[in-house]
Length: 551
Ligand SMILES: [Zn+2]
Image 1 (cartoon, protein in one colour):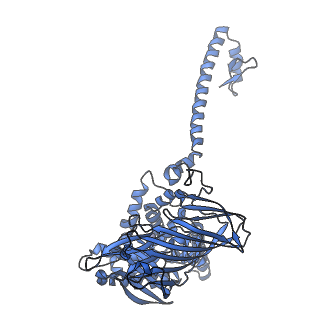
Image 2 (tube, helix red, strand yellow):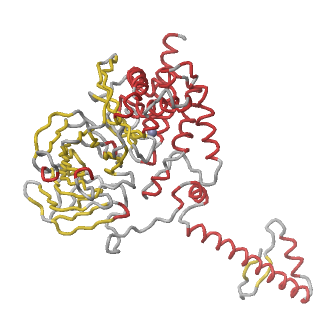
Image 3 (cartoon, rainbow, N blue to C red):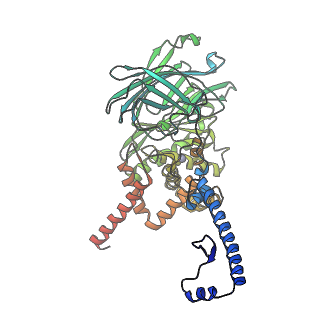
């Protein structure tokens, strides 16, 4: 290397281990000195060039705001996108730049009243009118009330009250995050209860298949029928839900919970040729996540197969719903349910906590099915079995989907992941246990032998792609990133991991770990670390057992 001399010229530094060579070079004639200086200059230029190149590489790494290992993670995960600045309707930056809600206000209960108007009621457009009252607990002083409001929902009559009414100071709506940000005149105090009430109105659309949406089908007389059902979001901040549905007399409604009573209502009488409509009032739900809330408004053409399913812990009213033209296609779904539901109760040593479980087949649905607590919604093709037309492989698929959704009543509904970055806690376990459930239903189908073909191979294939990502992706906040988590990695790689775990620690230990995990967090949220802690605990318990009994 080169060092600077006191006069500012450059000279070659002697290797520390060769002081004699420096003395030798100083004894050479002046031409040799010039050559040495030239060589040193060239060496300096080379070193400077290398330093500049290294600097450029380093600065590119800094541009990504991450170390090399972080850069690798960002290439392999949905976090690779630079964080966007979310804007409100007027183009200003949103005051809350995260789809996750702050925990300064925690919901306790929601009271929801809806009055859907469908096309068959003589209207050109379909609209859902409603009013919601949210009770919130102030866990940290704040003057900001933030909650999700879906696209296309018009808000009116918003009031915030504590002991007295709080004046609204400002309001900001951020469509890209589906957020409404309200600032009120004073901060709440810790432990104070706030009531937020508002009216809402939204067209019931048939093309987006989310929120409360409409679907249509032709009945056995080829007449067009309309129905509407839900497909909701997100997981954290559980609360109870009360629902009242004001409906046309030609419809019936379903909710997560059983119907408490029906009373006459005059609110939509001007829309019908008949006298008035009805208000269905449902029982208060258990504490649950918002994404599990579901209700459906069905034409009277819908029929159900009803059965009281006995379990070792009690009984559950099961209903399978479909249009009357499919009335003869409900038995298979019932036979799967009456076997798998009690089986899972025993397997997880934890009761199904609701008094009923309804399953509805709908004409159009964004997913194969959705595990709403007590009101599972399916596509027709994943619920209805016609012995004359359904293929054997489709019959097996129906059994798998039903088993998957019932497994979710524990993995997801009773114990919910804290956030979407740990989606595998819901989906991977539902996939793996769907095989266990169908295996119990039809041992002859050798379901556990099919795992490798049906999900391990899919996981390997997707995981070999550049856009693959870890099973857990911490810090997801962008709605598009969350959407991307619903893929083969969360579902199939996660379940392949559980299958490996099953093989390594054994079914007995796996089962005991899951029992600890599920029974420790009922109606609460949990993280992967809680699951691993449960497995570790079982290993420790088994170690003690082995030492005690000498087995
Ligand atoms: Zn699922």
